[in-house]
Image 1 (cartoon, protein in one colour):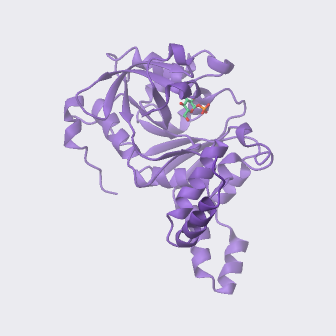
Image 2 (image 1 turned 30 degrees about the vertical axis):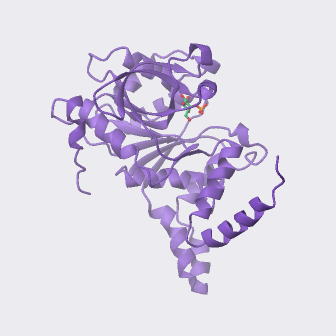
Length: 318
Ligand code: G1P
């Protein structure tokens, strides 16, 4: 793969010596999926289909598109189907081959060939910060890495991760994705206090709070589930005490780094995302994502759009 160049407009953020390339991604996938019960009683939430691919496959594909071919999934009990999904399925492949169904055969093989995927288990679910800490051994102390949360799908037409990687390499700090949300919604997210940097879509993060009360929120900029982190975060996570919900919060570790911008590996920047994001962990947003993505597809779109027009026309006025 050719080394992506760092966009010239990011130059004011660094000293012209970009840090090491980012090649590893960590995908925490140990959560219980309680927002989606009973569907997630025996099926991991990451495996719920968004049109015809499980949600997690979109996330892996996004990582791969950004050049992150080495992926570590943090799983737990009941998540074995994730490993099966990204593995070969010999019996299924043989059956499709015998039928001469080339298209489906290709689709089935695709997920197994996407990336080099590793798995580790978070035996004790002690929060997102703890899940990320489970990646310390795989990632090591030297290189920055990305974290992608499976509930957030970023539309593939809207670039986010590549931009964040550029900012990380230029600043050698940690980078979070920020999105403006309605002030009544900040209590659902990590929230950032920020300062301008001179680069339009990049802010310096001066503080972070996990799921604040709207009246205490430092802004309406919410952390959405993409991070490109300096490996120093592991050292900080080891010393981070349980916070909100009695869990070890990644946001709290990032707050420590944000408060220490002058030390190597310290400092946090935010890339402001204005594109399309779907929270597939939320039932209503999940339904919207399925309808939107299916209606834009070449194979399903024309008929679905025709159905939707008719359906909407027949809806009672409220
Ligand atoms: C997690 C993080 C939160 C972040 C959110 C993004 O929360 O703790 O800071 O804003 O993901 O989706 P969760 O949604 O897992 O409760």
